[in-house]
Image (cartoon, rainbow, N blue to C red; front, side, top):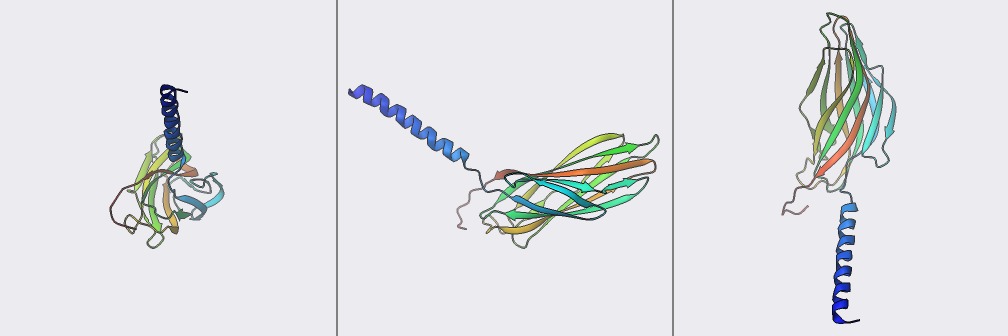
Length: 198
């Protein structure tokens, strides 16, 4: 083997080596929030829950969460949440699905949502209150974005907390609203680099 052939072989092996390292880095997922059991109270109960294989998603099937002909129903969901060590910021999506039915002349229905997080120094949920008004009969899918922040700055030790979801379904005369499911998904992790030590 001459020097030129050796150089080509070295270049190919270097490229392959860099590619393997890059693939390995991309394959390593950043730490993520995971969801445990959910409990419903007030005007609803949890009929079933289907966790995703990686723990980052949870589908909650709601039972008896509906409002008819001027009723106002409240549903309080509490979802067990596990925060990873070194956690900083993560976006969480919550998708609600259901149906609304309006008679002619009805003023419509609405679905209100607020969020909270309890867990001492583990973190906090940041999301403005959301209200969706429905003025026609249809199946709906409404998605909210929540940002969950480490409460102790950039260096969380991780642990357990509860994500609180407060829902209010409001109907008017001649209308009804049913909320069937709430799907939680821990989406993008956003990392910020700082010089201070954890």
